[in-house]
Length: 136
Image (cartoon, rainbow, N blue to C red; front, side, top):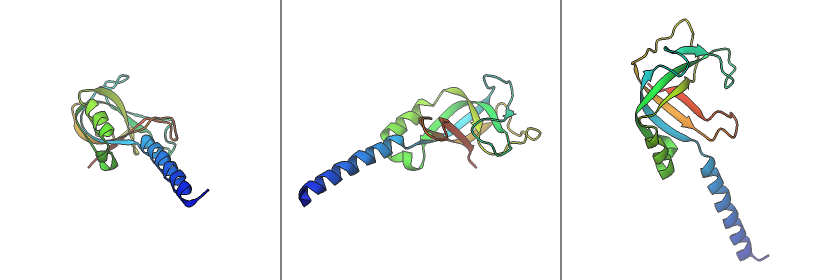
């Protein structure tokens, strides 16, 4: 194999692996939401979930997405912009990441929050398609 053939093989290999990396990149959206009842409860509830085992429950809330925009690396990818825009108007359940003491729940129905949503396929670790974090 001469050097030209090697360059072509390496270029094809690099392009193929780069496209796979981009396809697996999580989508990051900044959401402006209104807290509503979840599908299971009429008010926010602390719940233990299988996605974390730090001894603290997560907070289950219902959200209605009022506004959405891409964040960080997702700002450069058109498909990520489209995904974030499709969230506007949706109502869904969201487990908020972080420690949430069941005796000190401060989030109430009707509150407006800014949430960072990280969406992935859920096919790879941690096998959970959507993470939500309260943005300050």
